[in-house]
Image (cartoon, rainbow, N blue to C red; front, side, top):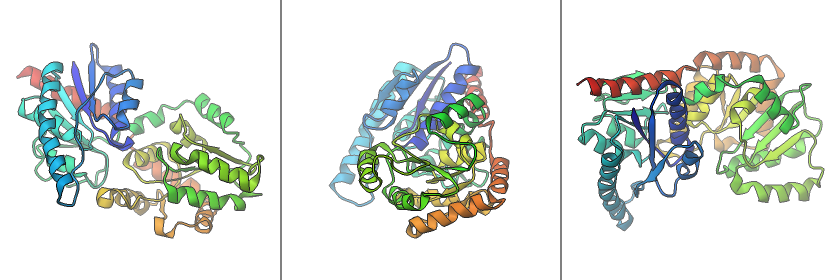
Length: 373
């Protein structure tokens, strides 16, 4: 069976596709995979590491303001349809799966025009523009949240969950112990992780840095994942203010190579509210302080965060209210009572941990149905 995966721009579109690919490899014999992304996206680095063949087409998002850049983007989108058609003719997939981002648009649309079974996966409560448009032509739409209802013209909508969640329940205790040792986490007091994101969110990093003077003698340990873009500057600033010894109980790193294990090792996480993050949190049952990004299209992170908060599985701290004092207060509140245990229980109740299997079976059924025609 040949499966073409496409999606990109952010990790939220890429990681679910990779999780699906891993699950398909376990279930399908004689599986051939191809991933179509963009030349400058994160997928160009992440996909080959998984041993999945990668090819790129030239396409970019459509600027909101009319002008020359919008005309160029439209021309590039038109050209990308031809590029997508060429890729599809060469690979001859049995099914095409789009996980969002503008690159999936021309690939999934051309697959539909060529009679190839198509499926899109929507990670957010509020769908992105590309998936909203594609939902009218694809054979099936897979959604991560039961509350996602913006596909009135879709042929078929299936609640699968986000396949990233499945990888969280597969974490073994030895991986959790290894990450504790790597970051020097002790078991005698709670641990908190602040995740600024792969690119680093400056407002979260500023709040985390302002938190450091309060942590001497604090009742919790801290792992601060700064993002690669800001790590060196933060390292210099912290050393200048606190010396080479830094702050006891605080570990600062640019990137975490095993976030699933770290989520199982800590008692609270401070992070954005991207769809894959929400899926991971509910699978691990990690209490969370969510700081939704106000800069993303459609402000979809706010809806993701509110969905969890309304079910008392997380608390929301809007970015315009984010200060070191407020962040410290929220952390202490969660850790200081029975709050963390109750939040963890509610979060786990929301997790769709069988998502990868459910999505894989949907992919196989679409490919098989075409074969029977």
